[in-house]
Length: 210
Length: 210
Image (cartoon, rainbow over the protein chains, first blue to last red):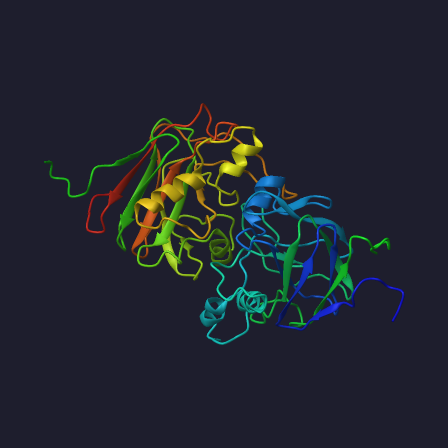
């Protein structure tokens, strides 16, 4: 036992998802262990999964494509669920692109490939929700999808360095699912899918995050 | 009776929604009667409403914030449902902003105000779907939400002139719901909510659309 009061980090293996339950005020730090890895982040109200993070509502709330530090991500009921608290990465994150799913890989001629949508469904099934009514649009941390002046989107490799991390604070009790994106048919994950870690820093922890 | 083989236009009264059932190849023209009015457009597979137009999947499919003429809008199963066929408007449309909903107007201190989300739910209830599992992000025709270089979104009045129209072709049998957006707490609907019309041009119609 150490003197630390918070749990050990959870490893999100490459191509898989893991989840953490946060109480209001808890923080979760998502670390890109090897660099160049996209994480698909989903957040649900812990007490009612019909309320969940909604990218469209967050854009409406912030009048931005992606929040700035200190701003909140909101749910489909327009309530803050996560705050963008800290970031040691280059700060490129996406909130425009859908989670990869079986149909995406079927179109590549690669049926049966792991996907963030299936990873989410599996994680939620493990929490007692075997049939999701739909797959919300994720927060794609570390993903680099610049928007051109005429609205065109480019797809680049995640620019994250080993150990770069983004931290969110929970604004309600919530279930956060993070998928280490299995995409290996385009460049977004650089050298290929690799693990992330999730570190929960409870609300009572005084330690500085960085 | 006239010689015309297609039905009369459907009026979408200000602050309300109406729907049309399209067969594959049918076209629907949405006309802004007085100008300056946003329409929230939703599209569902007519045979299975768990498949519906998904803004996030369409951005992923087109690598654009909004399709260009001739490109398709796709569903949450990555199948084309509508094609952006013709446009006599200034061509500013939005696919970033959530439908207005009761929570939006409650935040303005105006509970009970009509909303596009409730208009959609009411329209779908009329088709035998009384409980939607969620409100998809709409295609907001005529809405002017320019994106700045740093990802900031601005809210402007719809620049549509009286009679301007956008036309979609159905790529599957689909139920299209259009809400004349009731928003009157910001500038998006210019002088205030006004009607739209929906004109269905069946696949067999030879007439040129414009």
